Image 1 (cartoon, helix red, strand yellow):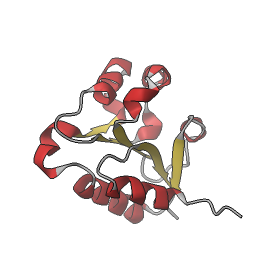
Image 2 (cartoon, rainbow, N blue to C red):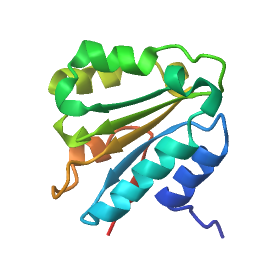
Image 3 (cartoon, rainbow, N blue to C red):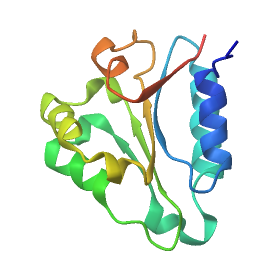
Image 4 (cartoon, helix red, strand yellow):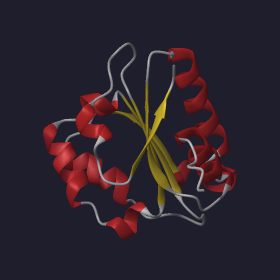
Length: 139
């Protein structure tokens, strides 16, 4: 019998491993819990010595396809991974979503990407269906 890990457990594992990567979609009605997860990831996941080079937090409404692809493909600097948090991820433009689809899997293995839903909105089903995404529901 195999016990599947929850999205939260997988996220915690990825944060604790200094080279852990993955794509996590944070959604749900509990806004306080979403804020705690974002704060935890932003404080614990980036390598402190290289934080300025390997950590980014952006609002999806400000990203077109080119900027989104550039954000994800920036090289790692003296660390095991980059950490990228996208707020209001359900508002990603179609252009940015297409850039995501073209993004090489090899590069995403070097990124811990947190996609956070806009407060007080339902889960974006097109984001939830992205290949390889881990769902983390905050109830």
